[in-house]
Amino acid sequence: MIKKPEIGRYRWIICALLFFATTINYLDRQVLSLLHPMLEEQFGWSKSDYANITAAFQFSYAVSMLFAGRFVDRLGTKKGFTIAIILWSIGAVLHAYAIYIGTVTTGVLSGFGVAGLSVSVVGFIVARVILGVGESGNFPAAIKTTAEYFPKKERALATGIFNSGTTVGAILAPIAVPLIAYKWGWQFTFIAVGAVGFIWLIFWWIFYDAPAKQKRLSTVELAYIESDQEPEEENLAEQKKVAWYNLLKFRQTWSFALGKFMTDGVWWFFLFWLPSFLKDQYSMTGTQIMIPLAVLYSMTMFGSIGGGWFPVYFINKGYNAYEGRMKAMLILALFPLVVLLAQPLGQYSYWAPVLLIGVGASAHQAWSANIFTTVSDMFPKYTVASVIGIGGMAGGMGGVIMSKLGGFLFDKYEALGAIETGYTIMFTICGLSYVCAWLVMKTLVPKMKLVNV
Image (cartoon, rainbow, N blue to C red; front, side):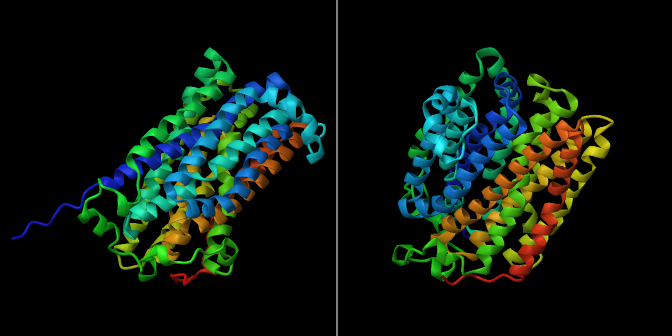
């Protein structure tokens, strides 16, 4: 009996690099939310001031996502990812110099609708915009790398694994950030966390290359990676580049984009506002929020990895990739409904909303792993990053709306002495978003259909 050659595991080293990049990505973006209570007191920010700062990040991230995918497609994964992480790491570090930046640029930016904002708010907006532009390259590059290094049947799992970096970043941040800030100050916290991205770059340049050029990749593993590619994915160098606006002709693009628009804002809200929620309703600040947030975000790791595995159950039962994924996503869309109970049960203990929101956030991560993979299921590889960019822009715009709405509601109800009402409204939106998004996606693309670009 002839022994079957081992496939090899080099593709999982690449997946590990994507995981660490995503972890760094979320560490950098979450530092501000964890320092918000401290900065709010130091600079006298209102909830709307903070909403403007977070919305600036989300808006720049959203607009840049439209071009980031195209940028990665044109420049190539290796160089595209490199430029993205250099830019977002610089943006992360610049938060430490927000006062200086705000002093220098307040006059210039006054013509862009920011008149009346404090120097500190303007400075953080500038740093946040740079961070958003750089971070927009992470997911288009990561999803494109996954499409390069994994066959379709493994892409959801690989996406779930690297996407769990969002969770690890969210876990590490509430543990590390308050400790660093209280020991060395908030400025040093931004510098220390932002510098980590430059270390990752060393490993990226050592270990990554396109599969066809990768000397560490065995011929058996390369054949396995290419085993289920569609005919139109062959000879990619001969394919014409597709303008992103031409991709808007396809219902599959709109399905992905609207699904992201309706659900990404929920995750952004959890990421940016939960420290403030614990402060506003339970008077928790600094190191007090470390354990609750670490527990909450630890829960989401199971969702991210489990979400990548879940559709395999249906695929093994004979469903095609898209149908299996949509069945899994319908079940996942039901879990965030428990967030509706966060406020009613929160009167007994802060652990009630923490754990219920943890279930909803975990379901989001599982949902996210699958909604990303619907793109590589139906689109040829050379358009994947561009479609991810379109969806990322839509998701970022959803985040802008959630941030601005949250800031408005919290200022309004805080003035009325009932800020908990503002959180109740926001949690209701968060709980219902996924079922609504699934219905929209299923209506637009009822069945699996490959896009013929």
